[in-house]
Length: 388
Image (cartoon, rainbow, N blue to C red; front, side, top):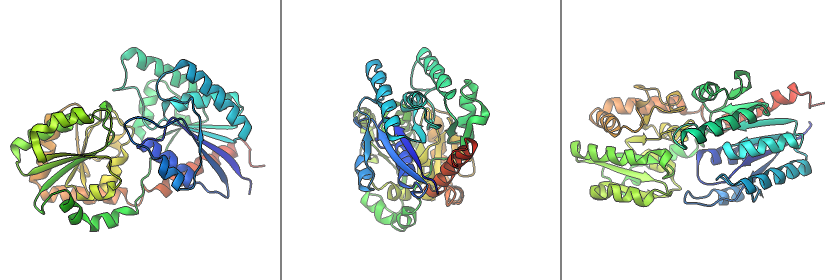
């Protein structure tokens, strides 16, 4: 069987869905068919790092030192030249880029290097909630340009495809829908430890625990989670809130939640997300823009109903009224009302959690994701007659 060389390219390996997805795509690659490398720029900032986990899995990180997230014209040109040389030197058959910056620079470098197959996964989009209108228009134009140099675009949800097509990025035939999978294995044990985890969080059996998990960055909308917590606290004194993650807004969020005292706890970075999810009664996602929301899959795997903003690909993950409740973004009152509704109706909340579990397990596991990615590679190999 012929083996193909694959380069997965991403800007950084902080803690996040795109980074986890990319890491597992390399870790789970069928080594008899694909020799997969992980190429990343430097990882820095307030959002943590998965680089130790990557190395612990026996994966060497091929460093692209000039590939950075911010716009940096000199570094960006150097990254383009560096990646072009690297792709040529290692003779990759497939270049698979991840996220916007690595996607633009990496795809241009792949085309310059004469790579046979070019695939890109945006992991959402940057067209809402990140930049002003003119910067957003520029980035949309760049994505249109790069799409013309791409064999396939992987979107996480049907809503993600529609968002790109609405901006004339790519054509429908270029898109493949492949979800960002999660590791389902830890959740059974996490559910068995639910009461133990709740005690560690200072929660009694009767405490109603509401939680959120993510990078503490503006796009995640956690300020609205804190506002909703204040509203809920006035209506339901026995509700407690936890927020796990780290990022640039940690200090601001602590100040905003200070008047709630020990009813609202910021937990910092957690390495036991399955346990934390299993301890919750309701999971809340307040994002202003979200490609899919892998944390919603984790909540479902833990049999927890979600209250989530109706943005991006979220409605493709949370079935409103069946596996959770959807609310408008930037609307703390609506979020608080949804939380209170689930707090009042335990039977409905538990039914939603069971329905979410049935939807997520086993169809959204990492192995299913990888099967779909490699099936796409095989289709492109056949399309380009590379398996001779």
